[in-house]
Amino acid sequence: MISYQSAVTIARTPVEVFPYLVEPAKQALWSDVPMRRVTPGEPKTGSRIEVTFGKGPLKAVLGLEVTALEENARMAFKTYSGPIRWQGEYRLTPTDGGGTSLSQEGTLEFTGLWRLLQPLVGAEIKSGEIKELERLKAAVESR
Image (cartoon, rainbow, N blue to C red; front, side, top):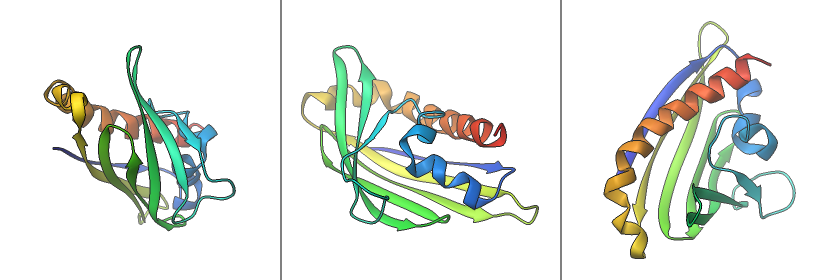
């Protein structure tokens, strides 16, 4: 199992940061994992999305279900389909200076033949998660 956690401080309020977690067009500005809504309407607990990992022949589509959604404060999810069991959470906390402390943590467990890739991609995932948060920070702060 791969565990990750990282955090970044963004010079914008949680109200400005939160849409970058839940709106596919804004999420695409910072994440390497494209998101597509499966459940129509505004995101809420129980909503489903699909994300795509990898490139070329090593591509996996994961179905994610939102397990908790507190607007401008928290989003948690877990897989409901795909070859990787993933659960994760983002937390947004206001800072004294009017910004946001954004933290994330989660676990991934590869199943089937995909588990052969787990040792190879574990370190990349851990370092990639903080890089994604840095890109999110840059995307939000540049707007």
